[in-house]
Image 1: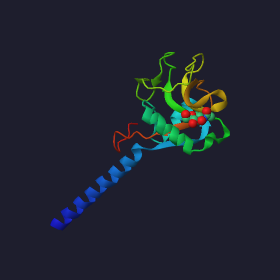
Image 2: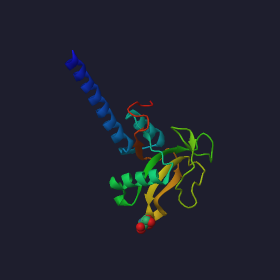
Image 3: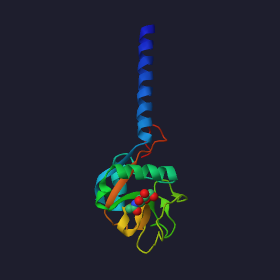
Length: 161
Ligand SMILES: *[C@@H]1O[C@H](CO)[C@@H](O)[C@H](O)[C@H]1NC(C)=O
């Protein structure tokens, strides 16, 4: 009897440890899509993976996303853009992180951006010939760019979707 309880407790402890490990792993994880798509498809792509378009609401997160984008080495050609999870489609000039509803406080807009017009989705660009050096721009949401997804992290192993 004692041995049985002990074994099931061991199993329970093991499951908790494994879960913790996967959550810790999940918290720092970004993923860049293998193909370019418009902003909506990018968002849907992340959701299908149980992730969401990356939210860069601090300098640390912006830097982590830049590091991830640099590591993908797709910027070698001199043009590389990843969709971030922000848009002002609902109300012009009022940029919102779509998956949380939070307004943008931190931002890394390039000089003169956001420029408005029909540009409503936020992209992180490396495009030196146009002056973008891992800085943000508002682009038409139909532009084909890479999704950068992030794990949800804080909720542990429970997914919000
Ligand atoms: C981009 O910015 C970094 C850091 O400030 C700088 O070292 C680099 O030369 C810049 N690259 C371009 C292409 O402007």
